Length: 319
Ligand SMILES: [Zn+2]
Image 1 (cartoon, rainbow, N blue to C red):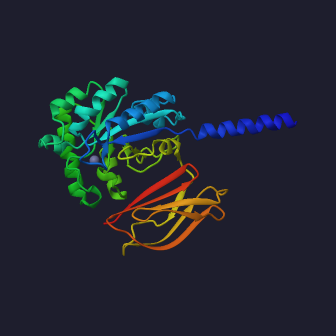
Image 2: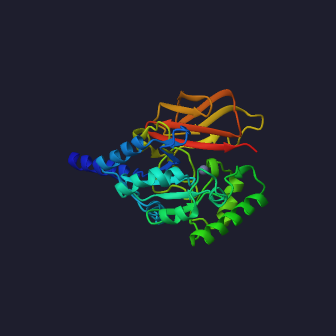
Image 3: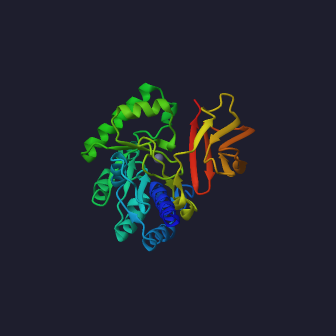
């Protein structure tokens, strides 16, 4: 009897750890370009990360592999990683690509088309993109890289129409995935994005991907500046954390309360408010209720809740 109980508990634990398998998607921007420290990854850092993946048994898969597994509602293996690059900077073509090629790692670049179309100095040309296409895939990041959450419906559609036509003309395909410029989005932008038939949409919130992740709101961690790679790799998708309050960006720009539902056994959690950093908060019967008075600077309010290695981040956009 006792032995059966042990086996039962063992099965229960292994089943729950299987349910919590989490893949990770990372986002890079510039490579070996020290002029822009907040969006740059030095080449020594990139090599260090790639060697870490290799040494610790991580499998670098195509982004499509993760999306297709999500669509098929399959378990997502813990050792899967997908690498994405936002904005078609020339520094990837010149400095990043040789290292990706050396390791044989697949990648997906989300294109900001106006920059290439109008030959902005720091961006790759269409000829260079066609060369890069031998090693990786391209997806969509907008035409103008504007703050789309603040555009009118008409402006949003005009941006999509223009950018998608250029994409088709220059690269011969229709993109399947989309990334919001600056990671900024709201319900309205989400709805219009879906009308364009994207199969998956990615944000820039820290987090992970597992069975049940919303395919139109997939988290990616940025590996820029001095990233905490090991912390990010430990993040689990927190399906059971729910931010109850706030629901919207505060109309007067002052955040007064954060309420969230977390694991009912948790005693302590950490709360992050953009511009105000992290703080420890108490959890009572699975509820965090934090009262405060925090002025939110800018139109982007980011709130994160961490319990153990589990993290949930949400961004609220002001109008
Ligand atoms: Zn971007």
